[in-house]
Image (cartoon, rainbow, N blue to C red; front, top):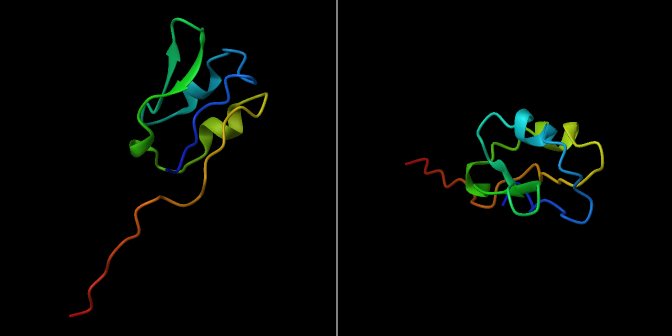
Length: 73
C-alpha cells in the first residue's frame, strides 16, 4: 500500500491529515479521537497528509503496491 496505517502512538488527533487528504483516505476514529487510515487502496501518494502531520504519525510510500502491466503488442 502507498499509505501506511497511522501511528496511533504518535497521533495527537489534530485532524490536519484528514483535512489535507484530497481523496478521503483518512478519517477520525470516534472511539480514540485519533486519525485512522480507512481507504488505503485509494491513496494517490500525494503525501499531503504526511506533510501536514505535526508529529510524524503518517508515512506515505512513493510507490503503489500493484505494478502497472504494459503490453507493446
